[in-house]
Length: 252
Image (cartoon, rainbow, N blue to C red; front, side, top):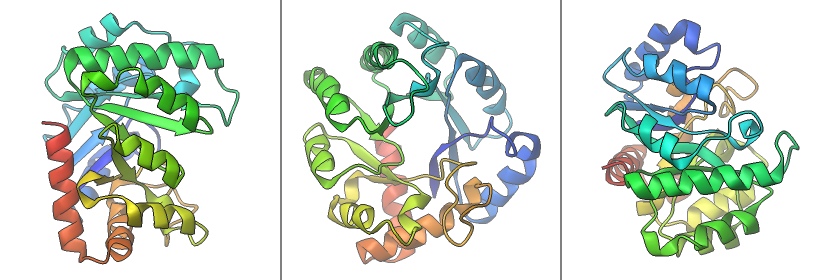
């Protein structure tokens, strides 16, 4: 089992990291991918990836952070190449739900991350909220570059998912799929091909049922895996094997 998206540099995970790692191993997690959200975040991640062999990291600027953290594709590539355990580009993308960052700054940053992903042939971890058309239009411009797209914590429409499948995208399911009111999202994951699905926690955010409302952590991925297995009508062990293989294929 692999948690394809967590934020180990956020509290309360960071100050309890050894126990977080221990509990992750106890539920059968083999790898944790801890995601960069700012240059400051990346500084912490460079240390965290040395804490255990199971931890890997990414380099990227979250769309909420683009006003303060503009970064060039050249700089992203440089930081990516500094350490073999940095294996992805992101979290990048567009979030027009909140006005935390200027739209133009988000779009500029997204394009820089895309160029870096192409230059490094590394997966691009994408956050998209209230920006389906804009996200797809930008990605479409690069469709001839064999992009490695990972839609993190996917909550988009089935129509959006269908368009992204044409770009060979992967989709990561978070604890949101365990929520009672997430029937549309459950239907979307029912529709998505098994060979395009990963699982994540996005911890310390979005704890799955039965821990909804608590601070999330990687070990809670077990509940998401169980629910996704039910949605796909397969055993949890099959789901774990498939999503693990998908992660290893994408990040190879």
